[in-house]
Length: 357
View 1 (cartoon, helix red, strand yellow):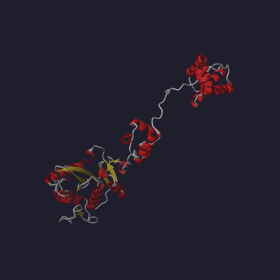
View 2: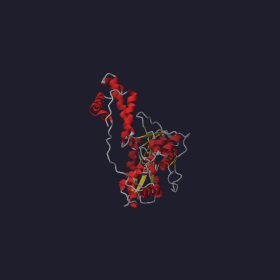
View 3: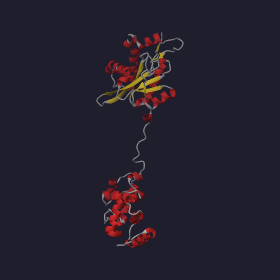
View 4: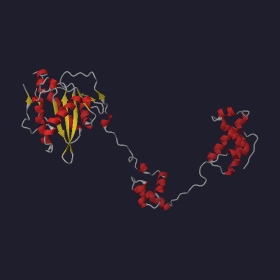
């Protein structure tokens, strides 16, 4: 249909749109045709100034020229927008009964996807998926928590402070270093963990064998070290393992203990404790039957710790044992109540052994 006007104006545009009603234009086509007619009318009003018209409608000059050219070549029919979609669209391939069946099984098994629902349904997998997507009944719609990411553990949110380079160590408890070792026992490679603890001022060391990588035994080991040293611990240094998070980190916060972390994959940041781990492996682990029950392993470990802290010379301390160094340099009768190394083995015959002068 061709309609010709020399000048439109508002009333002319309305008459044009009214005549195009017979062409059964969609609402989108009518709105876009109205906008293009306004551009042509503005171009005529502006004395056919393309640049001014383009600025008024925030469009390009080439777009205005294309509209003018289409109007001159094809009349107003050239301004009607032509959809880029397919001319013929496939209709709904599902019958009413099939749609009911899909909704029935989707409601019955809300966590099943379209591929699993196909086991009970006749339509293809892609048809079932399109129908569920159109009805917003996919698994993510039916089960909102199905795709929810797991909540991060509280340990992941810990602010991991690094040990300052000028951190001073003057007396027992100023800095305690901790680490852990994992050993594989027997033909089934059963895991056995050793958690180690060392006071850098006195080189007194404690250790405990545990069956799991839990933070609770690590917390108890730190409490044992505080009892052994008979002083308040000020700071601890650990790696980033899970055994030093959760209960352990919370215990540090409650006791006002600074918790420093080593850099990832940098064992040299905790060199003193790593060296004690080597001594523990050479002098205890390789000489002990670790297939025994864990309480018997801890009993033997306690005996070895007494030997290590009381009898074994330490090169860093001038060939003195850690206990002798502790009493020589830091002992005062006013604050001394005995150093108990029988904390992890309640059944040992040396249960009540204490360091005394």
